[in-house]
Amino acid sequence: MINRLLNKTSIATLLASVSMLATTPSLAAEEQATVNYTGRDKVEYDYAYALGVQATVYGWAPVMMDVALELQTSVDAPMDNGQAPVNQIGPITRLWDHRDRSYTTPNNDTLYLQAWADLEDEPLVLFVPEIKDRYWIEQIVDMYTESVVDLGNATVGDQGGYFVLAKRGYEGELPEGVEVHYSNTRYIWLAGRLGVENAQDEEKARELQSQFRLMPLSEYPNGGVQPEPKHATGAPTVQFPQGIAWFERLDKVLNENPLAEDKPVLESFEYIGIGNDGLANLSDVRKHALENAFKDGFAIILDAAMHSDTPVNGWNWEYKAGAYGADYLQRAAINMNSIGLNSPERAMYPKRYVDSEGELLHGENSYTVTFPADMQVNEEIGGFWSVTMYDAQDRFMVENAIDRFKIGSMTEDLVYNKDGSLTITISHQEPTDATARANWLPAPNDSFMLQVRLYEPNESVYTGQFSLPEMYKSN
Image (cartoon, rainbow, N blue to C red; front, top):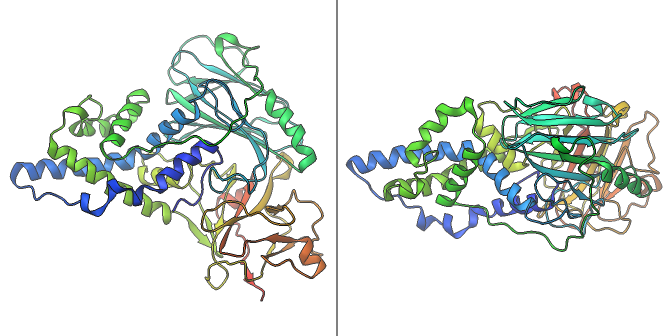
């Protein structure tokens, strides 16, 4: 149902809970029957229902972000699974693999570091260390998942430095000579990644990871030193709100993170109790309308999420993220697939479930796919690519005898074709041919899916001019 989730432990737990909504008892068919209202009651019901569907679509992304914020920050110290109190950095301190089943489609390419920040009282300052010859990004989004800024080699270079993060409208003094980036919302999410070349390189990446700092402006420039993270055991749990509880959560997040440009939209929601503290006092007719509106709004978003990709040669691409404007359905759909998806200019994540004949991929078969010599990633700024194997049912990485979970430009000891292209063999059974074995991506003895990651893609990728090759069954 949810095809692509951002790689954070508890956020994926959140999204896993979202994926259960379609089968949750509160959405059962017997509870969705519409009372046959007549007269003014019918008018009241119909209008409240229509506004409720619109509010569900409009508010899907900010509610997901708000629930994630609460979950990620529900600790008293930074943890090694990415959780941390507000305004502190939470690192994920190792590459993830088949053992990690807290969220779907994690990558095996980067270490993560993230933070949820509150800009209400004063700006924050992010310190980035010098990062040479390595992919890095600190993706920053507001509570509507609009991009605030993507800091990385492509945008600010490899020298590191200080970056001020402020709420739009802040009029206090700011340090001279320091870049300032403004958010439209009080809360923001910082989602950082550091590329890792191999097991030996992981320790170097961890050292860089520990050097990032996040501090209030009043503690600039020496604040925000990261403590040693505590070890997290187990994954946090979340109950994603539904029905009236969902609208109550929407009311909260909109009150905390209002957008002036959306005021006309929000004023229309006052009829259903949003923005005027009126949810508790709604009539039974309007409450009933909202319960049904949430169910149908969810179905609308889910359908859009399942069909939001652009298929090319069996690979599904998503070309819109991080800049939605008034396209609230697109915003909702993309965030149901992957909360806070990267801007296409910074990374793209095409995936596939079928072979060249449209048949579902299965490990009992053997497949080949030949990736071109030029995968259109900008290596000069640390760009690289990979293709990762996942079980199609749960979308976790697959345990295998050679501990290989992905193949790509960082993979050692591959055998390339004379023209520089790379032919990968994908199967459950180990190939007998030496070259095929060197380039083997092990599959489960079951259905599977693949996801390519293109970090720092060239313009031809995110404008749709570049396509990935078809994948063929070879037995």
